[in-house]
Length: 364
Image 1 (cartoon, rainbow, N blue to C red):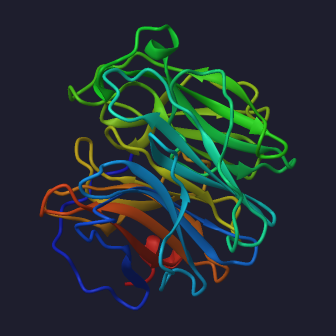
Image 2: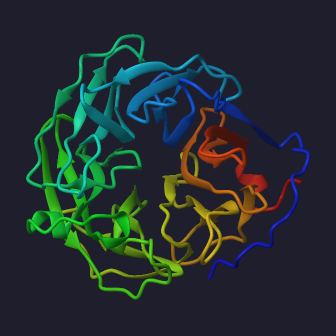
């Protein structure tokens, strides 16, 4: 099992570990920066997207920034999705060769109950230099959520994306708060990134350890293992994540069971290593209760056992959460996350860059 790492003070990053900031909280147009994801494009350039809330509007919009030096510096963010009268949030990315898609979860402003959501999509065919106008992607779910990790391209060319939905909203009995939702998860499969078919209904009744945490299983992270199986690690309200596996490309899923990855009410991020495809890396909050520290570990047996976690970010009680991880052309990893600030309702997007050897403790 993964062990909870002790909280440690901020350290000076050695040469094998670098960290920095993509977007500061500025007290204005970029007051709140949330739920970031990062992907490597066909050329090796990195693309990060996240939701931004301006003060005092508190209405989400989706923005993107890019890096051409493997994550060390980033362009100024530019707007991708801003839907009139709606709150655009929880974006994710899908890379299919030279095509790049970004999807939102968009809800009406000031909902009294969590009744429904929409999904909007933009597409770029030129490494993010230009984007199409947002278009709505229809789905047979009233409140489709949980697309907070990137879609992936399977070995057979199928596009796959984990997602979750609220069973109460689907049955016309919507929740008032996130803690009242009852989430099930599955996978969306597509050949073109535009038309998607849902598969699976992964769900479990679990005893929550906090009142505000969600019921059921949500916000899945998805990876294809070297043997072709799909592994999904899901957010829960317990002290551990749950997992499910598919042996037929996502068409059917094993009953969910506790994962060996610690975590409470927060998603993880997964990546299969480019040069060592038998290995996968996870970024996660290594705590049974808190959203700190943020750690990484590597598995060589499909997520059954993991290396000793190494912290990439920690605080004295403020959240470092919603990680997303990818790999650079030079084989280093690039992880990003949202950092809660002590000054109030403010969050920033931070990054860390590190090697496999550093994760495994072979470098300082």
